[in-house]
Image (cartoon, rainbow, N blue to C red; front, top):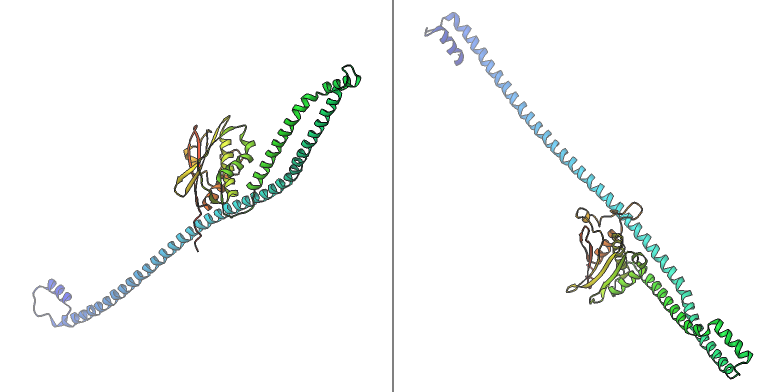
Length: 362
């Protein structure tokens, strides 16, 4: 008999021994039923345990799949952000390439115009030399005529008429003024030729060509080009130090100098000073400083001034690419641009360059 059943019967019947024969078969039947119930219960518990294990395994699999999907979604979002950043970078690069191409086209056009100007300047200069010789001969003839007339009597009509003509035409003043006019014309032509030469050097289309050059010559050429932009706003002070020849693309660096000089002029409200300071910063490294007495740059935007399309100028006054292109040019020369600025006290842009470019990596 099942122990549980035996305990329950004895609890109800007390210690009566033995059990009645009439109840013996009944209790055996009940005991068999309890035994079969235990087997069924064990089967059910085993089945429930297997189902629980299966459910646990499925839950674990679902959790793993959910984690994988979350990781995949995060990766997709990160990739989407990277693609958006890449698209923005590509758009910026495309705009910079278009701007560079435009500048290159303008440079080629300017070089052609400079060449066309140089031709008439050349023959005007030659004609002035010939004219100077002609005037020397002409004045020699006039001196001879004056000497011949001087031999005539004082009251002679010819002598009186020639004296009146000399006084009316101010021949003595012309004799003094004509050489001055020729000298000033020569100086003007020399200035035009210098501007044309600087324009040709400034717009030279040799992209990427590195050569040993004099940075002072590049600064002077650039000043000559942008002089009309500076002369009404600032006095330019040159504080040149001793610089060795620098291996660079001088045409590209001239573009950097031009952007910095024009920005310095725009930063000056009424009248100020722009100082150019050069020197050797460290062995094998030189610097060019362009310092102005303008309005300065607020600290909150100093970190953004080299970003493409960022500008503090009014709409239509600037593209926001000048400093960005300059930054790229200096980087390609393995140099850096540094900024020191205080609002109301002006700004200093310092271009630091290596004297010699490093050897390209194979």
